[in-house]
Amino acid sequence: MSTLALEDVRHVAELARLSLSPDEEARTQGQLSAVLDAVEALRQLPTDGVEPTSHAVSAATPLREDTVQPSLDAGRALANAPARGDTHFAVPKVLE
Amino acid sequence: MSLVDCSMLELAGRLERKEASSVEATRACLSRIDAVDGRVRAFLKVDAAGALAAAEASDRRRAAGKPAGPLDGVPVGLKDLFITEGLETTAGSKILEGFVPPYDGTPVRLLKEAGLPILGKLNLDEFAMGSSTESSGFHPTHNPWDLARSPGGSSGGSAAAVAAREAFGALGTDTGGSIRQPAAFTNLVGVKPTYGRVSRYGVIAFASSLDQVGPLTRTVADAAALLQVLAVHDAKDSTSAVQPASDYRAGLEGGVAGMTLGLPREYFADGMDSEVEAAVRAAARAYEKLGAKVVEVSLPHTRYALATYYLIAPAEASANLARYDGVRYGLRAEGVKGLGDLYVRTRTQGFGAEVKRRILLGTYALSAGYYDAYYLKAQKVRTLIRRDFEAAFKEVDVMVSPTSPVPAFRLGEKTGDPLSMYLMDVFTLPCNLAGLPGLSLPCGFTRAGLPIGLQLLGRPFDEARLFQVARAFEREHDFSSRKPGL
Image 1 (spheres, each protein chain N blue to C red):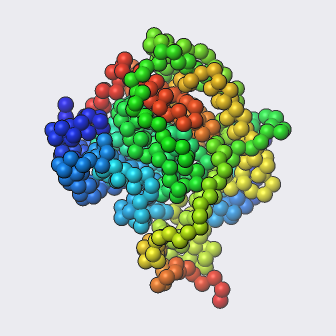
Image 2: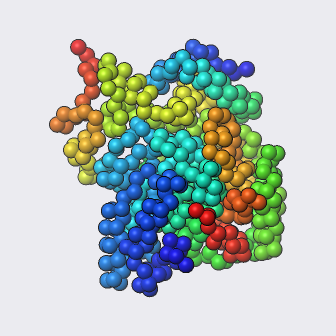
Image 3: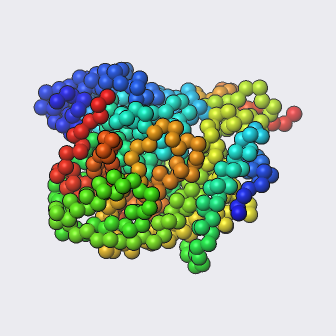
C-alpha cells in the first residue's frame, strides 16, 4: 500500500548523493516499500495535540562565554585530506 | 586462575597488591589475541606498542604509589567508533579506511587519564548500523560461544573480545540496543546509560538523539567501575549531563528487598524463544525470593516503538552521514567529473548496502511532502512511548525483561531480510527512544549452551539502582564465571 515508485527511489537517491544500479534500484524499491509498510501502523495512531520529542532529555541549550580557545592547527586538521593546499582542502574545479 | 580470566577489578586488586603488573596483563591480552582472534575476528586494529607503553607508564605510577584511579593499568578495547589520536578509526566503513584522527574523543581521553591501556579498535556494523556485526565493511565477527553464530551488534567486536578474554572490558555505543544485545549474546554485562550521561565528543555519530556510550564487562561491579570513569560532564558535548554521577559501587551490595520490579506485559510477546522466556521468568521469581515485589506493568505503545525507531534513527543518520563526501578525510573516488560527481561516486563506493539503505530511508522520511507523515509523526509517537515509561516508573523502581527475543543467531541467517534483523532490537530500542538507562546481564543458557540476557530498565540517571539490582541477581547465580570453550 505504501509501495514506492521507481521514480521515488531515484529521486531519493539523488537527494542522498548515491548512485544505484538498475538492480539496486529494484532491490531498494522492494526493501524500502517493506519498511514503509511496517511503519504504516504508526500513521493510523492518533497524535493530535501530542508534542513531538526531538531529544529524550529536554534540557535548554547550554551557553558559555565566547572566548578564544586552542583548536587544531591547519596542518593537523588537513592531515587526512585526500587532496590539499597549504591551508585548504582541494576539490575539483567548480567553475570554469 | 589465569590472568586473562580475572575481572577488571580482580586484576586491579592484583596490580594494587603488586601480584601482577599492567605490562604482564597487557601481554597476556596480546597473546590471547594472537591465539584466538584469527577465529573470533573481534579486532580491526591491534595497537600493541601503544598498549604496552601505556602499561609501562601505569606500572611506574603504581610503583610510585600514585595510581591514576582504581582501574589504572587494566587493558581494554574500543569499538572502532571512538576517535583515537594517531590510531586509525574507521567506524567499520571503507569510506573512512586510513583515517587517522588528530585528537582523542572525550571517552578515550578519560580512559587514558584513568590509566587504562587501549589494546586496539574493535569491529562493528558499519557506522553502528546493524544487529549482528555482519554489516562491517571489513569482515564479520564470530561469537566465542559458537563461532558459527553472530556475537550480536553493532558492538559485536567489543562483546566478542571481552567474552573471549582478549580484553578485560570494552566500550561500545548503543543507539537501539547495540551494547545490550551483544552483551546478551555473549554472557556479558552491558550498559546503555541515560541519554547525556557520557560525552559523545569524538564518538562518530549515528543517530544523535539516541546514541550513548557504555561499557561491556564480565561482571556488574566492573561495569559500574568503568562507567564511573566516563560519567562526567563535558562542555564539548552540548547534550552532556551537568549533574554529577552518583557513586555506582557504593550501594552495589544493597540487595532488592523492598524494591518493586515491573514485568512489562508487552515484552513477553509471541515469537519469543521459549528458553529465553523461561530464563527471564525464573529471574523474576529469583528477585521475589530476594525480597523484591514483582508486578506486571503495561507499556501500551511498545508495538509502535520499532516503526518509530526505524524512522527517527535513519533520518538522523542520513543527516549525520552527509559529511562523508570525499573532501576532508577518508575515501575519495578517482577520475570524477566535477565536485557533484565526486560526492556521488565517493559515497557510492564507500558505503555498504545497509548504510545506503538507511540513508535512503532517512532521506525519504525527511524529504519534502513526507516529513510530517513520517519524521514528525514518529517524534510524536516517541512522546507517547516516553509517557508510557514515566507512568510505569510511578509504580515500579526497575523494569525487568528479556534483552533479546532470541539467543545468538547464525551468521548469514538474517542478512537477506532487513526487517527480520530490525526485529532483533524490539526490546532494546524503546529505552533509547525514552532516553532511559538500560543494562543487560547474564541470566542463563539455552540447552545448546548459548547465553541468555536479562534486561533491566531504570529511571533517568538511576544507573546506581540498575547496578544494585543486577548485582543482587549476579551474587546468587554463577553465570558470569562461565567462559566459552574456545
